[in-house]
Image (cartoon, rainbow, N blue to C red; front, side):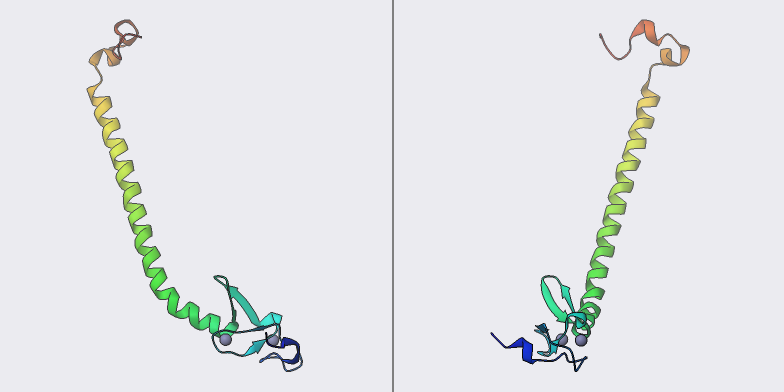
Length: 108
Ligand SMILES: [Zn+2]
Ligand SMILES: [Zn+2]
């Protein structure tokens, strides 16, 4: 264990350090560190990390979004397609208003 109380923040010379950034090894006060995916990083390292990881993850989420959008569109299209088929396959008696006598959906 390192003695943190003796360390001062890299950005604030008069503030006590509460954590050490694992990336750059500098000490920082509470205001200068941030948590990111269960890791405590300083602001500059966090920015660096976000800049490098953002591009790839953004691309990936974009692809996933596109896939979800296409899947949703397909499901919608199928739904309306089959709905149209069902409407078309309805017996003409439906349109003539004799539905309730014939019971086209079966014996119920
Ligand atoms: Zn750092
Ligand atoms: Zn600080």
